Length: 301
Image 1 (cartoon, rainbow, N blue to C red):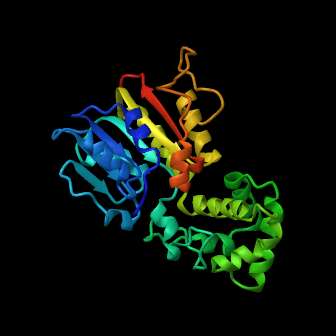
Image 2 (cartoon, rainbow, N blue to C red):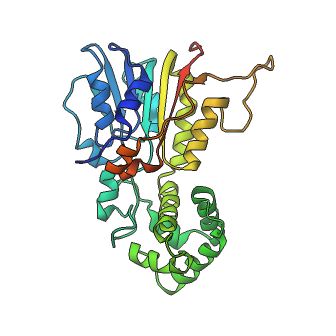
């Protein structure tokens, strides 16, 4: 299978889909969640889906109600305008890397394969993880590892990477894994490696910036009573989604309007949902997933 959708039923139920509504899937991937949304739409319903990975586009579902866009989801608003869509009834996103991307050795996303270090979701992009490892300054690498991987020894890791690259350019995953070997406690090797790869991937694809950009567009696109549902996989992106739902911004306190009233466009529907133990057993990718959902309480101005 190209991709196993995470928490499929929970995701669809959270959206409270209107049969004739207009919905957006920000992360088409293998089309699993999109297929479920389409199954709940009538002939007059519509789904707009995004994916910057050409492999996902080539996996398109043949359905006249689907508009599949080969772009980063941060371009949501302009693509809706291009398709003469003013507002929408709901938005879904399953953030992170698809099973297909992890399982494609040549893409360089996984610690399991010896491959060229790449990690681009958009293979047309000229920027990949090798450039971070070989061209970023020591402090830049340290900041990425600390911010996106929560690694307390990020400075030491960055120092070692810079030292090793001066001897030989870092181009392969096996080479990077060997460089990191002294930072891998017994029994936690894969966990630390996965965190480093996660940080590199986030930086390569500017994932957190894109996430913030699209979230800030939603108050002016989602109808009152509409729903946004996001599946997150690590603390950095989950914190962004959580704070946006709670505060309408990415700070710990909500912004206020001219009357001193909190400016919060969405209200959470529940705290969050995690996959069942049965799902985690059958799909290990679901292990760290959290589903957060919120309803729009503003009218679009």
